[in-house]
Length: 82
Image (cartoon, rainbow, N blue to C red):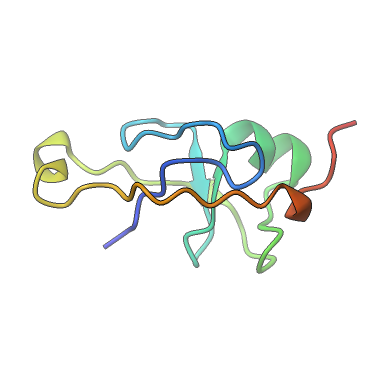
């Protein structure tokens, strides 16, 4: 089951479970669409993997299988914006 991390590792913007703007790699590193596209070129800075849209968990399943509340913020791993 996906962890559904609550924020972008680059800019720390909130990424609630229902957002279509979350991107993940196969290791579930999590980024917002803006950072994934503009800063990272669609590739994870941690593993080099492809960043794809994170699936959304059905609202009815979130009560039993909640999203994570643990934030991961690693701005040093993201290139600066131009």
